[in-house]
Image (cartoon, rainbow, N blue to C red; front, side, top):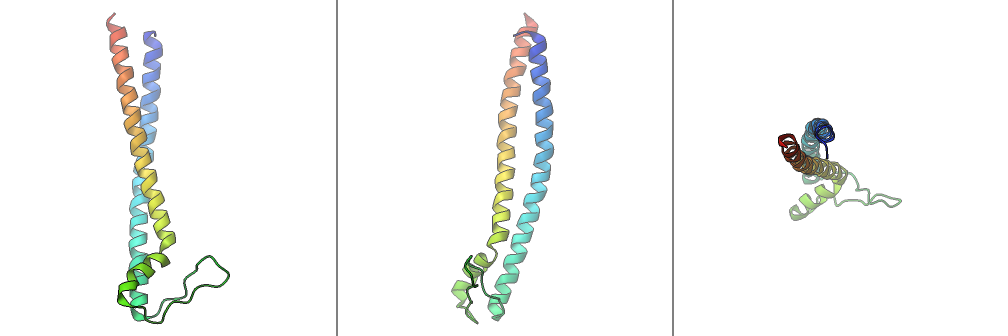
Amino acid sequence: MEVMSVAKAIEARIQRLEKLCADLDKAGDTKAEAIMEYDKQLAIAIARLHRGKCPAMDTGGETPEPLPEKPPVMLIKKLAEGICSESRLALEQAKVRYTSLNTKIEALEATLSAKQSIFRHLDST
């Protein structure tokens, strides 16, 4: 390997790392917003279920599944989680995206470090 090709590879990795870091910032914001939205929707669903004012739950079938007027207290949290499943899906997808970007950054940092070591070795010879 010649010094210039290694230097170009280092520069390309640095640019990629900068882009991934910017993406990570956006993913962090998206994750935080998804957490906020899920928590809000869950609180609303729990309050409605507790008051007996929650609409029927969409189960993917032709007709929504009616909920009991006043469900048992032990079931309220689980029912509310089911009602908020779309918000939970968005939250989980945001978490996975954030974690994935972190993993990609760590891998890129490792390859950048290796290229820098090669560059130092080639530059000293």
